[in-house]
Amino acid sequence: MGFLDDMKDAAEKAVDVADDLADEHGDKARQALDKAAEVVDDKTGGKYDEQIDQGVDKAKDVIADLESNDT
Image (tube, rainbow, N blue to C red; front, side, top):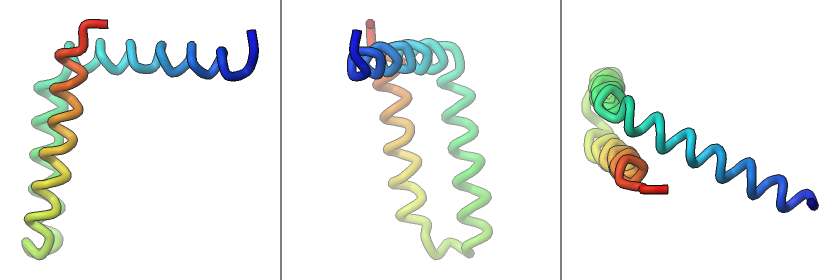
């Protein structure tokens, strides 16, 4: 087995772990994202509100994708 095969196996295992974590803790992760966004928004005086919301939305989409992944 070559280096690339080893890397592929490691990546597949990491995705499996991420899937499991999203299934078990997706709600907590979304709550943490909301709280972090609130803190950052407060610290920046709302200056980057739109960008923060976009980042949070994308992160939540990733969590949802992991939760719905049936691998």
